[in-house]
Length: 59
Image 1 (cartoon, helix red, strand yellow):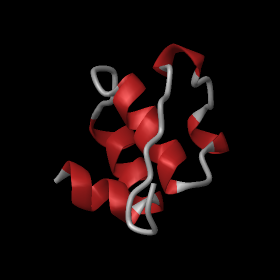
Image 2: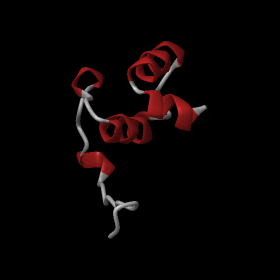
Image 3: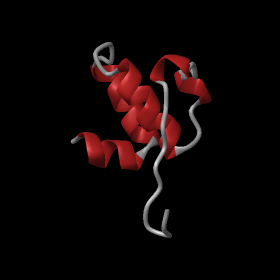
Image 4: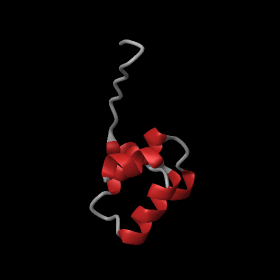
């Protein structure tokens, strides 16, 4: 695309990483999108501590 734009096509059902395996901001966002209805307060707080981008985007 361009230097400023990336497009990712993801099949969320194929994203199978566990919270302890998340490394990149992309991983955190995919996990959040896939598991959002199951995320409770403490789990979400732990994810936010590890990913500032997720915290800013989710808030």
